[in-house]
Amino acid sequence: MSVFLKKILWATDFSDEAQEALLYAEAFAKTFKARIVALHVVPDFSPALYDAAFVIREDLVRRLNFIKEEAKKKFTALKKAKGIPLKAIVKEGSAAKTIIETAEEEKVDLIVIGRKGMSAIERLFIGSVANQVLRNSPVPILL
Image 1 (cartoon, helix red, strand yellow):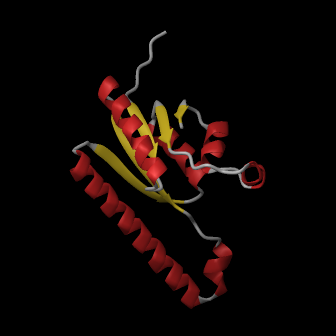
Image 2 (cartoon, helix red, strand yellow; image 1 turned 45 degrees about the vertical axis):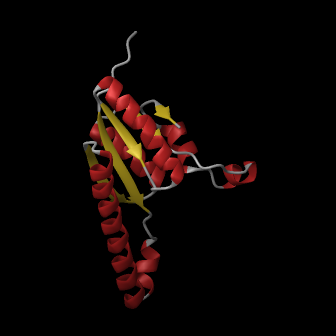
């Protein structure tokens, strides 16, 4: 059996852990001549919040748009600094669900994601994005 990677999804929240994960994505991309798809997921807000008051809704939309634009700027700066070609995607939604959906849409062969340390209690009650992706991913994952 041989391993062949054409496309790698790097899911990032721009944390130190995510930046470290990028180093691995880059190494795999270089080794296999694969493309990197970079994904940042902006958390969505409950529709109930949008309906709470017009002022709140407008403020949330404005903040979401600002966060999305900042993420796009970070991807542009990263492309220039690293000199790596990557397809940058910014989406709104549940992080784990959106990572999995994007992996399927982009037909990636590997997901690379940073993992933040969580206590056993946090994992039990909350679960981490990485853990949720691990349980539901259609492709291999590098944490």
